[in-house]
Length: 137
Ligand code: AMP
Ligand code: ZN
Image (tube, rainbow, N blue to C red; front, side):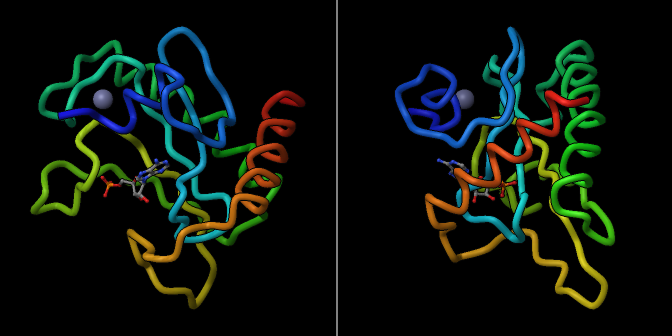
């Protein structure tokens, strides 16, 4: 079975990329729960936390620090949810490890998923804004 996130890593599927290094890729979730909803993935395929190694996890968590600050600068949310689901029973739907960063607002619903696909133009715009904020440090 092909893995959509591996296809994105290989450049065979499109993504609104925010950051890339040798080991990780950051891109916008195409069904964003809120504007700025981003995913960080390892380039190496492993299904979830139970199959992870410490080195890969450390790289993802390290990336999440800079990304969280960049999202805060661009979106100015009231809070930021950092989620990672393991197994279908926990709500995992893509079986390639990923960390969600989801801007949250006071009084808003705490949904983990959205059924509304983001508009390409919006996803593109916010990916550029967050990438620029990351570059600016
Ligand atoms: P999870 O339920 O934690 O496995 O989340 C998977 C996430 O991946 C969902 O929020 C989906 O909207 C998102 N997703 C699925 N396919 C793609 C894709 N091709 N590009 C970006 N995000 C995706
Ligand atoms: Zn994969």
